Amino acid sequence: MKHAKNYEVVTTKEGVPVFVIDANRSKPDNAVLLYDGGRHATLFRNDHDVVLLDYIPDEACSYISNSSWAVVLEKNKAGDKILKDYKVMIKHVKKNPLIDGL
Image (cartoon, rainbow, N blue to C red; front, side):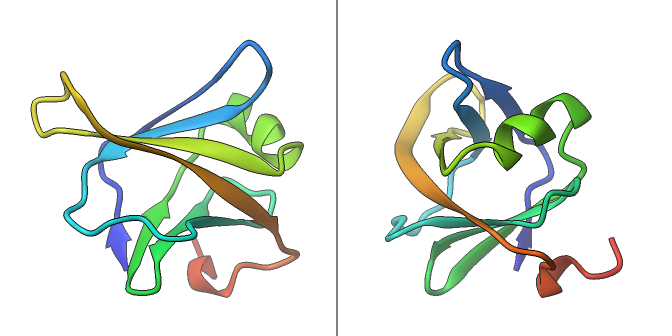
């Protein structure tokens, strides 16, 4: 599992959460965000690529809790260009075992 060191989360006017993360070489395939209602989430980009999104800002948590999907934007290293954008389903769970203890 990779740790997203520099990421942002914003919301659209419609309340859709948007995660801006560093680009990854692999292609996203049926991406899912596992979320337990807390300050951490796990983004499964594909079967072999998992990204930990920790310390989600409090103001974004309610939007994520009330959404069934989000948007992910992957930016280049300079942060001035979006290389990938895709929709992810949010799977709400009672407990996310991958972030236990965070």
